[in-house]
Length: 222
DNA sequence: CGGCTGATTGCCT
DNA sequence: GGCAATCAGCCGA
Image (tube, rainbow, N blue to C red; front, side):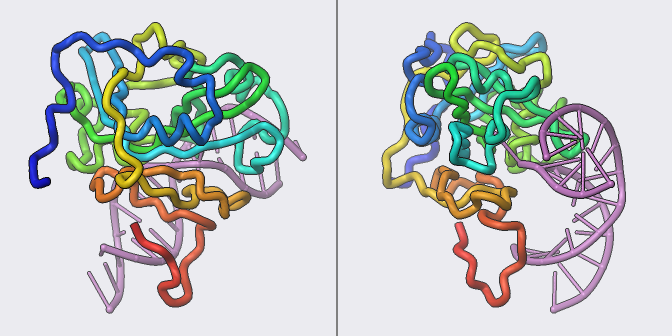
């Protein structure tokens, strides 16, 4: 198939994914988020990206990389609430990243949104990230969050009612997705809980596994 | 292109 | 006090 990217967005009516989509085990939700359209109906206009990379975090006891691993705190409280809400956190003293809360209340599972391909509202996205090449506009969790104009105000926002929402519609086939280790985590780095769209140039350049250099090219490449 | 480093603040132990 | 689910810039090959 050498057909160019099919029209990823049109003005036809689209519905937000129902809450039942999010009320499932985190790995299933992560898998099914690939290829979906993430929308922000901002005051400056609508911005849309197609998700190409996400990571699953299971704070329900076993995943040391999850912010919820050590229990509920003011910061991670949203993850312990109902599915279908946004968990937005601040890190490294300067960046925000966004997650989608999954599973039943009390089970702190969430999917970190790591990268997307801009498909609509490019002007507003560029205005927020002036120094970026088109390929880097939403390539990386903090870049994606900034590109869409998401901030602390969106922490706890309900994805089924907007203004930030995920659109119902085409996902991708199993053959198009790839599982790797998660980026930037030292503990629990062995879990292949990062999902990405194969061959997408919009996948982040982050290296999976412990942030260490390889002695002699033993690393798997994407 | 790949690798390394400084920036900068809130959160948890 | 230490570190973090990162990024942009700079350097060398």
